[in-house]
Length: 424
Image 1 (cartoon, rainbow, N blue to C red):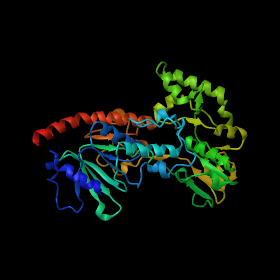
Image 2: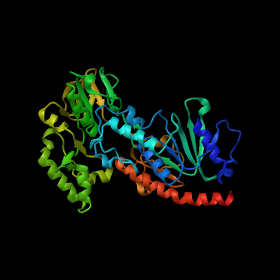
Image 3: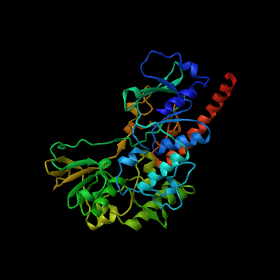
Image 4: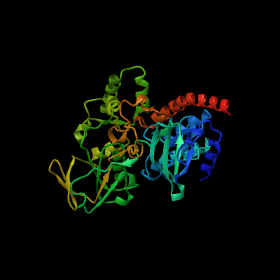
């Protein structure tokens, strides 16, 4: 708890500290004034925000419920995971990836990068600290962030002028309710618990969900001699990971600088048809809107193929329609087909958990606990509330958010620092 002593020392010299003293001194939970923003989440988004603030000499406190940096990456990702976009689009502000890293860094390389990033900027989150509520106090004009530690005597309420939500879009698993789940005798697990296909060697496995994770898990199962099937309920855009010797994402970004989005979408679809063929013949129908336009409209990311489609084409991965019900050992599909499976893996995504602890605002009342459309610029709310990494633009979007937030807070920070010198 050394960070608490450090914060207490800083708060004594702050000209706003006297406003906090009017709060009830008889409460059992200690209150601590934070001289700078409180950042909730020590993943890539939270680290990026803290680093950008530090560059402008603005201190911050990072609160993290897990015991480590980037707990989602550490504990809830599969072993073969690599970044789906080239490293130049995934690096955090102010520090690029090492030159010797491959274009698509592995999970372990990315975690090493995050560790080095935190050390480089001397970022020291308060680990094992769960935010149970955060609410803006209109009487004092500050945010009150209540936390729970591992032990009872570690419960603290932090008071701050700025609150940065950096817990990400993927905080909690989305687990669909399927008729008969309680009867199924095989294994049912979410991709957050999937590590490798080695434990499914020789088994019939049904993967539910055809996003990037579902596709890659199917490929991993194939590589470990399992027999995967893939549930595809909706339309999906599948694009090659590389086009014309460049990353599809990078090429798209370049084209968008010169051409309208619909033209770029048509180019991507023509190239995909040339390189991948007609995916509808495998039960993978494309949406009516183009991949980039669809991404802008509802945040749905196209699948970047890393080899899964070839296994579908060869018949090693079977494509199935939606699930109607489960029995002890079988799955009945909506088209009437019934098949036996040993395991079901739910690649059904994640949702934000912000609505469970951010009180007094409906800004996160959008789908899956994400900010509503009116949220200004996607990163700035009211009363000193900010979000980083909630614009469905991945690590690149989080880095852009972090820079904008630091610049915005800097304007208020200068005013406060000047006032501090006046009252000192």
